[in-house]
Image (cartoon, rainbow, N blue to C red; front, side, top):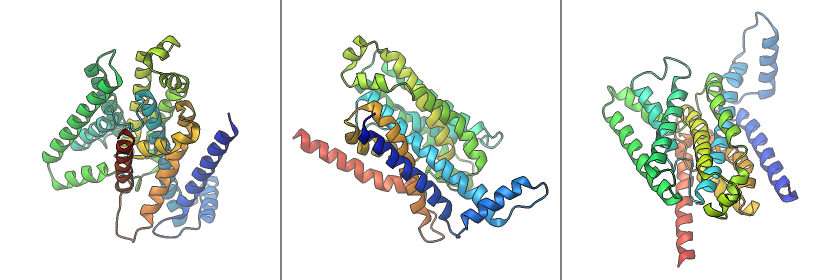
Length: 337
């Protein structure tokens, strides 16, 4: 590992730790975090103690929100880097092959029928199954030996179908309260989440990370072209299934808890890629750290808005990410001309 790569990892890691602790302090009401932590810890040692208000705020509100922000952001950044490497397209995002919209559709179906609260794992399972289902459909639509462009086109079609089905469910919702619940969830937010939500999200995220851990060498080989990668011993079909499965597990778990949070998986890998010499393998860990830092920053920013303005973090990331995406398109057109 080169010195500049080590410095980048240490810098982003330090930024994530700093932002994580800052997020514990920021909120509508100031909380003495260290005092709250001491009280929460002393309570765990006592048999009959009652939690103080500040201890409850720290352990039941601030800490789960920070943990979900860090792990969800890392997942979005990592999945974005992997998909851009697999598709060899710097403008690819984790949802380009239908994973995000499929996860959202699976979760919305459970919310629509009121099944999302019957069991603690119902909503994440719906998100994972929706992401897996959309990914499998994309893969079989494109065909076993499909090229990158065919996969992208199939993904666009499934994304459109998933969004259309979500719109249909909203149209057929039995009450305005159900519509409001689904719409607010789809905006993307990590507020009002509990430690149970984090623990529900964690298994799928960790399994997805583990599956993606050894894909760096194959993604580096793919930069030389599919035929060259094949001569180097890379099984492209197996690699695609491996990545699709990992992205579906990790992204489905995240989307089912946070809703749709866009553009982190696009922006973070694109900004960091030049710093690692455009090598996908070196980009994976950096994108995970960068994604965690970006989502934590966005969540801190939405807390700074005046009280009563409930801005969703997914709305903020889209407001920042959409102009950046347009900038990339305009920049690409200049290079082509």
